[in-house]
Image (cartoon, rainbow, N blue to C red; front, side, top):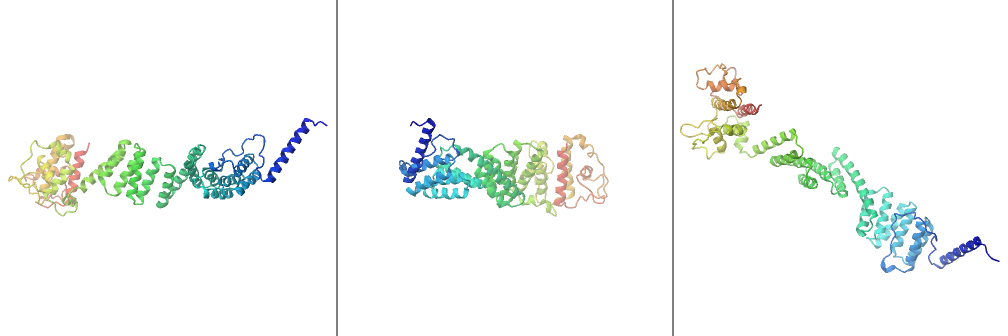
Length: 457
């Protein structure tokens, strides 16, 4: 009796099933789904066997098991992978495949156990590393997953599909680390902030702003060497980042290296000009100049009396530009200034006619300055200012104040009158006190007032 077509199909199916069962009973590989299927887990990386294992029964079991896995039959897949391991206990591709099968069942912990067993036999086996990364990611360990994916790429650079995942994880990890680092820095947990920034940099080593922010935290922590290293790396990565230059300046400023700080602020100002930065640069330049001065200059403000050399230096430093514009063509002959610490400024004030050289060609640098001497120098500076700003000078050039101790006919009266009328010097109860020694604080105050007049608009 002839079988109908449908009956013949059922008979063929029954025969195929019988053959599959027979093969299973004999220990051979199960027959995978005959019809082509869309892979259930296309992102899983097939655990390719090593070259010396090709053609073995373990390889056949593993390949059949992988087809079952991609068809969604993890139960049959596990039987095939276990059969492969039974034939060859060291066959780590099958152990890796068991890991993927566990991963398909959402058993991340079990998957990691299998991947770790495979990696104990071959630490650079890329499919196991990639699978472990997937399992770790499902357990919400993106940092560990990233390391596993990176190790897989290092072991097998052809796994291009992993690269985009690595990039995404790098970004996510870096963002988390940056958020944590900024919060820790704001709360004063500087060591923790530095650690988080280092981890963010490991994930994104080309990000200049990470080095800049880490440098700022280093500076707060008092680690100037690390701060400079990281800030300079930020500048190297992004030469147009003014904020990185500002961090470098802040590091130097904290160390009282005024000149270097001013240079760094100037670099920042050249990128993003601001009046505040310009003012800061000027202040730091002044500090640098002050620090380079000899002790005789630095102690002027605290001195009970000052010398002519100190007054010359004070005027020469604060009114340098005015003196340069007002100096005579030739310098006077001075026999006792060359060995003085204030020699450059003595030459400057005498050449501008602000302080006099005595008839015997001496300056007498160590002589004590009295109020009459200071009034003479002030009067000469005011004359130079008046020459450049006649409208400003009109208020005080012809002033005739009354003093209880200096008559209008006194030789020092014109100088004292000009000094007081301009507001640069003051009287004490109506007396000018020509002979009283000048204190350092008084001299500094007087020269500051002269500088304000000279630079006003």
